[in-house]
Length: 556
Ligand code: GDP
Ligand code: MG
Image (cartoon, rainbow, N blue to C red; front, side, top):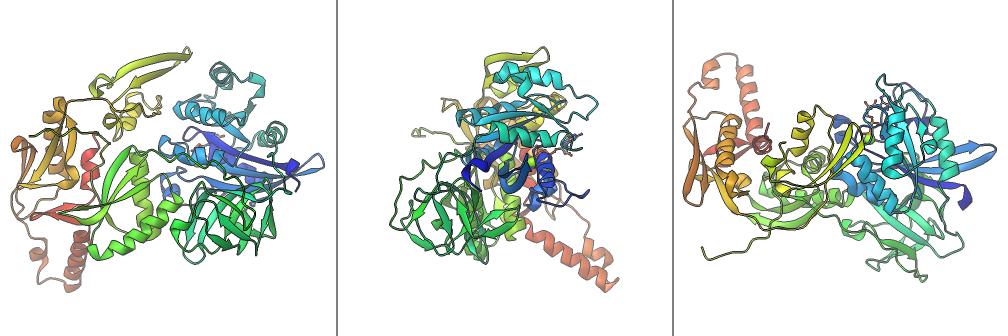
């Protein structure tokens, strides 16, 4: 495939507007996957993606397409839509010359439609608007096209109306891709220049790097050097994703594919790195801005003997999710662990779930916090969250974009859920960093029978301490099962107690009740209790379920 017949593009959109479904149809039309009734979001391969029904990881696939006698090699990257995973989108765009901007014909332009449009626009990519779900009875493609014209300055006649679900007009999308998206500008005769834009760690084969070739060619046996580490490797395998790894003889300039080159250590594969041929150095590509974490939490092994296993699991998973920052940390109560930075609470939940599902790790996670700068001395809905309105822009008579300045900690935990329920699902939300500002903040502890719960210690605005303290105590009372003794649940600022709840002792003894009865039933109960205990964390003499902390912190 000569460079002129290659097209590299991403599918971007707001959550649920149909990116992954459109990818399914494109894979089917090009014969990349068999057409069956069961193809649903096939590029969402991770267990967490299938369970939650959302894409969290960008995924590439190469397609072969013939049109009017010419053969094309298309490389598509399906991306996540949620704001917490926008780092995946921006990295994917570095391997592309164009995007399909998918917009739901019923919902119209939403917050991540705007955010993703600007990512593509700033990267100077060709943008093809695709109006999806025209089969819905409330679909209003005309209105959406007007929004696109008004907000993005793209002429209405450039939009393609489709139903990804039913396959209507999907072929037209492919024709637009060929017409409107330019082929990559690079040359096979140049020296090798390959951008590592993603990586996974495979238990048997080590690091698998996703690469985009900006020059030259690469094949098994070549010696390549990492611009970042200066280390040299021999290439074991190259290939394309269809969407599973399929080895090929070579990869050429303009192509997107994968490479395996005996990198056994996770630290050897840097995302954003440039690879070149041994003794043929090139100017490295600019790489990526590092992600800016918004939410921080401590992470500790449930059992300290698991420390090293958790460490290597963390390294491998962060290789595949480079937006997570990891620093060593330790705590009196929890032992040695890490402080992790995430792009949002959903990101944090997904990361924990992946650790459990893909690496079989069980961990203790402390309450999420946002970064503050502290100066130590010697000693709607919207008002309630300390926001200041900045801007307002009408997209049409029914949609408006509001811009507010918020303290970050007011939005990280549950703002999105609250906004969705208040607006019956109509409002959507995106955010970016606006810097630090001075505020009247204090540290509040939560105590169980006088022992501080490290996971729940928070920095909070003075005006909100009493209400939040009371709320946390009430919530915690519901989240902790009764135990054999009374438990005092208190909120404290320094030595001062500002709220209290009491959890009464429980009297019945499950085991005693059936003692002397059926022995297998008794064993079963004891086993269940032992399993339950593993998921408990002991604070003083009080046992707290591990998931209690996140449950307590969600407001509804
Ligand atoms: P993504 O988050 O953008 O990847 O969206 P998905 O592809 O996961 O689709 C979200 C939901 O919209 C799924 O339930 C799809 O079945 C549904 N969907 C996608 N395309 C269409 C369409 O053309 N028509 C209808 N009615 N539903 C669609
Ligand atoms: Mg998706």
